[in-house]
Image (cartoon, rainbow, N blue to C red; front, side, top):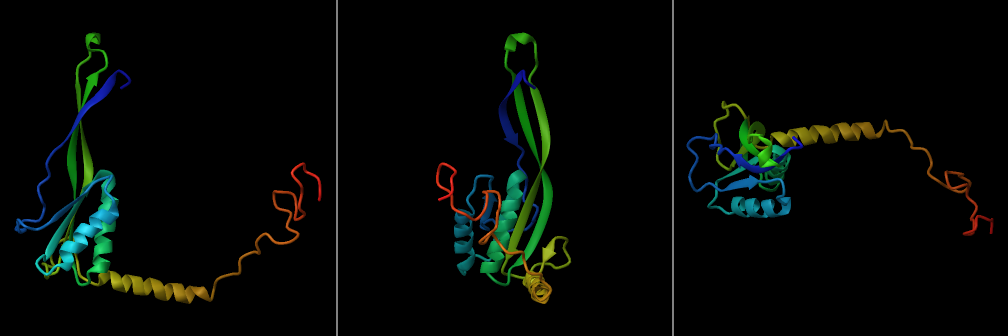
Length: 185
């Protein structure tokens, strides 16, 4: 590939995997460079308003983790949200052109399947039999269980070793002060 350079990248459009969604449902398209603070400002502003009942998050590639983070933050801020999660692949086509057109090399088109996620959060109840459904508050039980385990584990912790104190000879040569020439003061 040292004889080629990337000319362009084209993402194939991916239709929304949730049929019957209202056309005015806000969609938050999470990109790799998106700031979570900005995404959450938009999403929380919409969901805290009474007029908005659903919101859609989507992300592909490196932004999948950021999309999940945003949904989890919003679920903590706005209680009682029902969730559908859909995982799929988005096709990305890259066109590579030869560096030297006179070398007799052809253009290359590379298709890659990139993982993508779509998350629908709703204030209204959703069909719980559909795959990818998560009931509101189901994370609360997980966090409560983790807190109980942590409290139970506190009594079993061992004391840590003492830190650097007086007389510890660590990597700097002992507890005595030295002047800048290496001698003892």
